[in-house]
Length: 305
Length: 319
Image 1 (tube, rainbow over the protein chains, first blue to last red):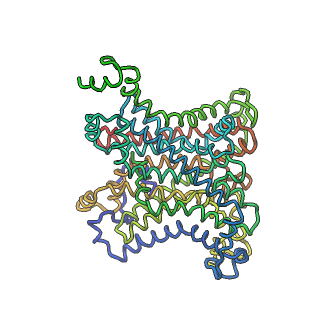
Image 2: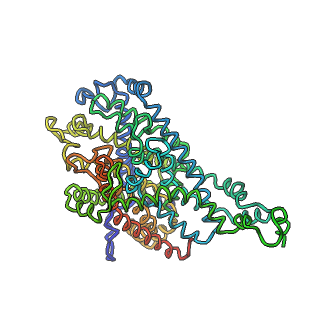
Image 3: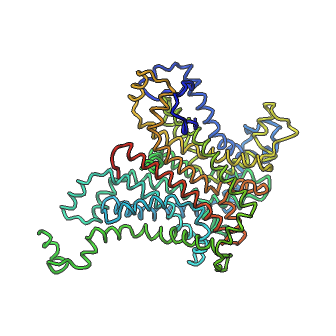
């Protein structure tokens, strides 16, 4: 399929049976044909995409001795499920603290970023100061600067500011990842709000601040939710800064703690490890389940603009 | 005019006061509104970027400011076999993973663009690998590809494709480990590409396909001459992001292999972490990180021209 990117101008050979794209013509597809061209490939891809989660879940509820005995029974099923791993995780480790840290950092960083982004996006799209276009472009460029090239200099800066090993190290650095994205997304939303509303408010004597708070923000609530969900997910997912800036056990976030604290080469840790990974993903999955549409629009919106 | 009434409340009529100007003037107002975002980005993005560049020319270590050593770090790195290996693997990793992700992602998007029962549900399930934190799914892959207790090995044995006495050493063999991390990256990247491309596909009007089909176009021609050109702009952007994030990937590798076995799966980001933070050679680590920049710039330029193309395709100046 990728060959098409560099395909020459020659007449294409009508060989590959492509799937139907339109709703209007779908009656042309018979069920058996659709089964082969659509349902079966789709099912295979879905199984591959979801299998790791199934395996995680099964491992997390398996008793320890079953984990080590692959060829005894069917490893894809559990005879006697146990919740011991979850119990150990929640009551005999620092896991709740890590979960709380992750939540705290993610909420604070997301909140800060959204506030800064709303202001920035409003300024760029509506106040249209001199150089607003350029600033918009620069913010997009900032989106393209990956944390992997910043963490070393940032770690020295964090030391100098005295933030090392505190949640603030993360709360203050995560916005650099989130602000460009949120601003870019919100600019797209703000552009769809008609100017006339703002002009009316201006004539009625509202200040820019009042216009933003009372007119623009209420109208951009779906955009704000999208930005919030996506930013929150990014925070939860962030790893390299958390690994570099946090060193002591009780200050860690879930992703870093899972990798460093649960891994000591002991085979019996696998159950707890999987339980930890599962519980760590759960808040995001729940959030996602409620806001799928917002999430998708955030993801596609960021790419489309 | 009417602003006399307003002005009376604050300052003398006529000339607006400095405060008034700071409050109303477009440019000043813009500055105030931009201030929080700019503060964050300058303090924690622009400044570290500059500092990283500077550090790459010094011999800084943890706890000690470095001296300027010119290009010495880079000269060392070019002769360093581990670095060259990491560079080559990073490029191979990015290339293979991006191509496969794009192929499968586009295929999945085309599949999902069909009339399906439970379409919304399927679409949301497909995205799950993308929302689950990378590290946590990497841990699952680590267990799936465990050398002793791999479920894949078990499956292959059951299917009779593998002898039970000689299991595949997934994570111990350098080549196998490379394949495994590439697979895990592909697994995680597909949903993003598929869902964003699906959003692009949904904006293509069905009537175009109807018209093309009436003119005798085959399925393949429909794809090649209708879908693909209309999708090019979004493909350009999506793939730029994908390449960018694959190239600078860190957490997947760190969670699964930490660069091992025998440094076979080091990406530049993980090598930079190992040398800079764990080894304490901040200058060298920064130099490795900075070596990624030329590649990132290439990706950004690619994106830029993709966006340019979108503008002329739409025939308007969409700001």
